[in-house]
Length: 131
Image 1 (cartoon, rainbow, N blue to C red):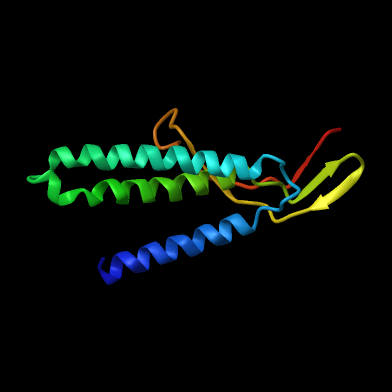
Image 2: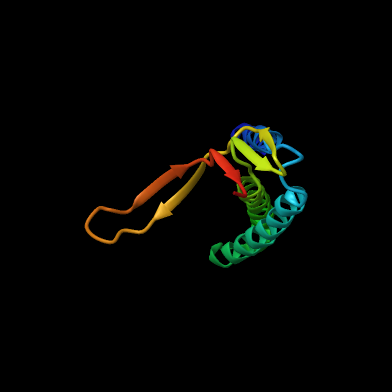
């Protein structure tokens, strides 16, 4: 592997570690399961995409690492998506108790209805509870 690829993988692992560590354990009993399931599905989808890219190479046997790179990228993307999905609000009210946590910023895409109205929005939950 080249130095650039190692640097990108190292930075992605650090970002993943920071993203996972910001999710409190008490937020959701199935939080780890959500992250793991999304990482697994992302890895499988990435391996399929990497395998499909082999069809566009001159000698597919020389480029089998595409499958590994696709799986690794899929695992990282799935883990980030699962972490964002399992994230909590800044304040959560449950059974009369207030819990504070670090909110996760979640990007979302809004399709355009007219000319230039679509785009990416960023949101974070501030309060969640049963009232």
